[in-house]
Image (cartoon, rainbow, N blue to C red):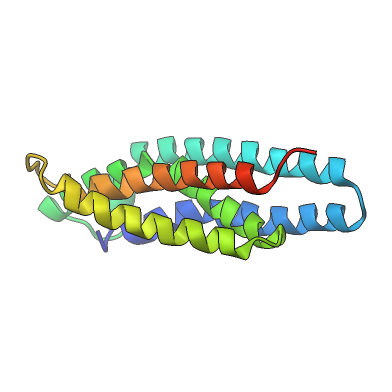
Length: 170
C-alpha cells in the first residue's frame, strides 16, 4: 500500500486541480452576474475531469507494473502493489470527481456539504471494511482494498445526490 500510494495520489489530485481552478472561474462568472457562463464552465469541468479520470485510470492500470518497479517494488511486493494499485485505479474517476465536487462545495458557499460527504465517505469505508471482512479471502485483494474502491464510488454518488438537493435548477 505505502509503495503504491504516491502514484495513486498523484493521479487523484487531478480532481483537486480541476476543482480549485474551476471553482475560481465559476466564482468569477457568478460574481460578474453571468450565471449561464458559470453553469457552462461547471459542466465543462465535470465532463473534462471525468474523462481525464477515466484516461488516467486506464493508463495507470496499463503502466502500474513499471511505475511500481520504478518506485522500488520487487518480487512479491511488486506483485501485491500492482494488484492493489489496479483495484484502486478502477475507482479513480470517482475519486477525481469527488475531489472536484469538494472544491466546488466551498465555492458555492456550502462547505458543510463538503464536510458531510467527507464524513459519510469515512463512515462508509469503515462499514464496508467490516462487512467485506466476511467475504472469502483472496490474495492481496483484501476487504480494505475493495472497500476503498466501493467507497469512492459511493462518495461520488452521495456527492451527486447532495448537489442536486442543494442546488435546485433555475
